Image (cartoon, rainbow, N blue to C red; front, side, top):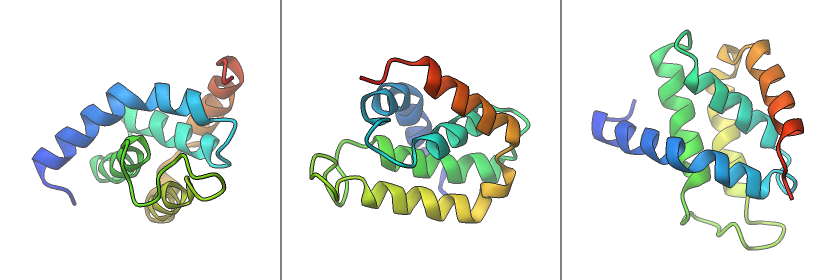
Length: 114
């Protein structure tokens, strides 16, 4: 479990950067729907704290401009982001509801992801 400072910093990073990042890359990443469902889950007060903290950490890694494999590297750039999100989903994915997944599908269909 992250400390309070890290969780606060990650929460702010996701709050301020997730929507713009996913809009910019949604067509290029196969895990966009899972990421958006996780994002909706973090915003749901019914989601347990430990689940939210885990998902916020994974989403913060996705939003961070600097990570292990730069996102601009064609074919590899999002593999580390996918691995981090997949690990988080393995741990807490059962807590992402069907409602979160449905909202994610609808949201992705409604945005302009050019």
